[in-house]
Image 1: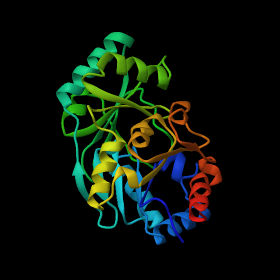
Image 2: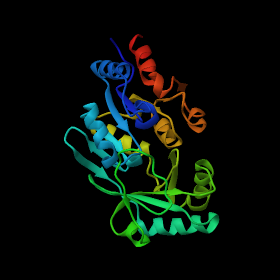
Image 3: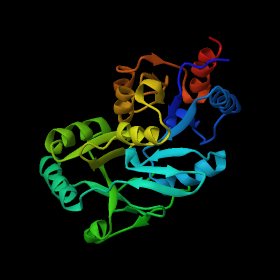
Length: 267
């Protein structure tokens, strides 16, 4: 059995995970067959480590994971943070003030750095239902009281795409702005992306972009597709990602990763 790639990079939400946060047996078997054929598997997610670790443990995943939009390289088997990049808090505050000068008050949240970094949530910020822990804050100074990886922003009137566009146009020379999912627009350190994190993780395994097939569903996966030799968008993917994908597969609910891997394994 031959497999044309040495690295399979998969996004988590909307890609590897089904909507109930499980991975199908078919997808598990396809990934196991790809790794048996010599490929490494790296999970690449926008979630920071504290919001990712329980899923990786449940999956029995013990490899490297790129978390926090590329900010963190995490060894799942050893429960160890290998690298971490933080957002300059003074720069983030300046960026927020410039965005609010354009669109009015924002609802804010932030992801603190570290293996057990808390997610702070301010008034009006809409958090997805589920078990992920958050800590409410009232005093804005709490947002800047410890190192953070990223800031989340929401607006009462603008949708995610419109907010990301305005923010990028306003502060794109200071920070990076990505839309990572429904209600998830993030401010990141300038130059940070899933591609930068994945390249660091791949280098630790002696692998390169030319060795890589990547799967994703959101605009924050665009840099990863630009880095990898082959980018595969899920059927449920955002149109911006589909526009730059080499291939479109079935949805996360219909084993889209397995569909592609099985075809490659049969060649």
